[in-house]
Every structure is written in structure tokens, then in C-alpha cells.
Amino acid sequence: MTILLIYVAIFVIAFLVVRGATRLVAARHDYTSLKTVTFGDESAVRPNRVASILSVLTIFVIWGAFTGSNWVPVHAPGPFVGETQFTYTAERADGARDDATVHVVVNPPEGEQADAPEPAAGDGWAHDDGLAVTAWRSSLIRVDRNDDAEERPQVVAIDGEPISPGGSVKVAHGKVTLSGKGTPNFIPDSGWQMEPIWLPAPEAVVGRLIEIAQDGYQNSTLWEHLFWSLFRVILGFLCGALVGIPLGYAMGLSNWFRGWFDPIVEFMRPVPPLALIPLVIIWAGIGEVGKIILLFLAALWIMTISARSGVSGVAVSKVHAAFSLGASKWQVLRHVIIPNSLPEIFTGARVAMGVCWGTVVAAELVAAEKGAGMMIMVASKFQLTDIVIMGIILIGVIGYLIDILMRQGEKWLVPWKGRV
Image (tube, rainbow, N blue to C red; front, side, top):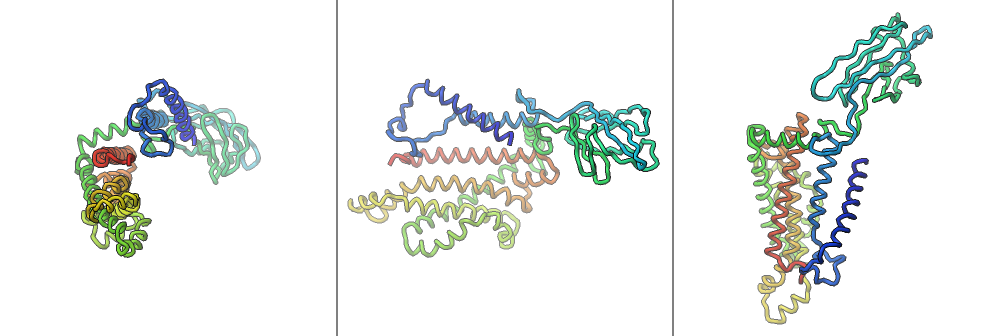
């Protein structure tokens, strides 16, 4: 929740600052500037590149700040490291009580580790204790081991605050809980930063990327892993598009095709591709064919629906105008329906490509020898979070680059989008 609030605050501040600054810049002189109405017109909305840069920087700074990265100037409060102590009150079976102090040294997660301090015995029957614990960890303290008592005394208070088994007390630089058997457990303050096993710092992920790029991972180079993932996605997407687009056109132009295939398409559309993995394995095995079939099915229904929607969205006045000028059905299809449906098809293609990228990771979890998903799966078994995050980032970056290429292709092939 704290991270979310920080992100929202940065977003609002950046929006206000950039919007105020852009008012001082000269007005745009392009097609959009000629429009009299832009609110609600999707074709008039263009991504603000400054906002894109600030968005990426904000995520990077928050990531670095909450992982203690050396690459960012600000850091969230980290885990406590150093020396601290707390006092416990022990009670014997005869009701006698005595206080003793536990001297604690909290070591950093990496680097030199200090031993537990050796405190003096003291005057009473309850003697001081020493404890060494690592940041983000906890440790039980057998305080009765060095006490002069025939029977095991019961801890009844921490720093003067009463405590019972199962309870906890906040102490300096940490918290003490009492187990069900009455053994104190010291938990040092963890701060706001994430433990590296849950979220490593950016430099750890980059270092792992360089290492795997040079030495490879699981008997394959990084580029082989990425190539096979990209190859599977593109091949599955192309197969889905080659079947889905003609099928969508047929459903949009023929009552018979619409009636025949509409139940199948609408039935399969909400079924997530991941639910088909067991069935695909039974049908096609765990080889490459099964993975391509799964990606084909992931793209097929999206491309079918986008092509059908593109045909349905063509203004009927344009069709009537073409027929009135003597155009044949093929000419209407070639010069009216296909050009006006292409924007919808490109939008569906971008969605389908994203779904394929999300599906290929799951497909590669099943007996794949190469691929980004396989790399992530193996790393997760050994809790190598830096490799997992590296794989996720690479998949996201490649998917984003593909989306940019598809946007550029849309500009080249469909320059009339939003203008007619």
C-alpha cells in the first residue's frame, strides 16, 4: 500500500508539472491540431513521450529505493543492522522473579558475520544472554540454559511488559514473540525494503543478465532461449492469423458461416489457453508441435473476432456507394471492406500477440529444453529470483518491441485509420 501511494503521488506531481510546462511550448501543427473535437476521439490521442520516460524512471526508482540499490539516490528504510538489547523477566516455580538482559547483534545479510556477544553472568539467578541473528531473520533464545534454576523458569515479561505464550512485545529495533512453550523469539525490524530473495536490486538483475549472456543457462545461451520463445510465438500467431482472419471475414459476410461458427467461436473465446495445456499434451505430446498448437489456439479466436468486428464495423453507406458505382462483390471486398476492417484487425493482432507471449511461458513450462519460460521455471525451483525477474523483463521488452513494430506497420499499411 505504501508503494502504491508513492507511485500515485509521483504520477500526480509529474502530470501537473508536465502539463504546466507544455502550455509554454508552441502549439502542434499536425493533423490532430486541425480537429475541432479531440475529447473522446481515440485517433486524436497520442502517447506523451515525456510521460512514458517518467513512468519508466518512476518504476525504476521505486524498485531501487525499496531494494537498497546503489543506482538510486534515495532509499526506503532498510532492515536494522547493529547491536541492540532487551530485558526479560523470568519466574520460577516458587514464584521468585529475576530480570536478565539479552544482548543481540543483527548481522547484514551479506558480508562479515559477528558472533553472539558474551555478556557477564550478573548477580541474580537469571543470567544475561547473547544472540546473533541475520537481518530479515529471527531466532529463538533459550534463556533458561544458563539460569540457576532447578526447573525451567517461565518468561512472564519483556522490557517490563507482561507477555504470555503466543503473545508479542515491541522492543527496541525489533519484536519479541513467545512460542507456545514459552521460548522468546527475537525478530529484528525489517524496514520497508524487500529481501533480495523476494525482490533483488536492479544491479543484481543486470549482473545476472550479463553473466547468462556470456556463460549461458541450462546448457543454452541466452540468445537461444529467447530465439526459441520468439520463434514459437511468431509461428503460432501467424498460423492463428492465417486461419482466423479469413474465418472472421466469412462470418462477417455470410449468414451461414456466422451461424455455423459463431457457437464455436463464442464458446472457445472465454476459455483461457492455459486450460487447454493438458488436452494439447494428450493430443500432440510435449514436443514443439504441442506448443505451436497451443499458441495457434491462443491467437485464433482473437483474430477471428477482430476480423468479424472489422467487417461488421464498415459503414453500410460506403458499401451502398460502391455498389451504386457499379462495383462487383469482389471489388467491394477489395476496396471497401478490407481497407476499413484493417484497423480492427491490427488491434486484434496486437492483443493476440500479447496473449501468445503470456501463453508461451506456460507452454515452455512443460518439458521444454530451451525458452524464456523454461529458464524462468528452472530458476524459480532454486529461488533464483534475479533470473526470474530478468526473464520477465526480457519477455516484456521483446513483446513491447514487437508491439511497436506492429504499430509502425499499422501506420504504413493503414494510414487512413481515424481519418475516414
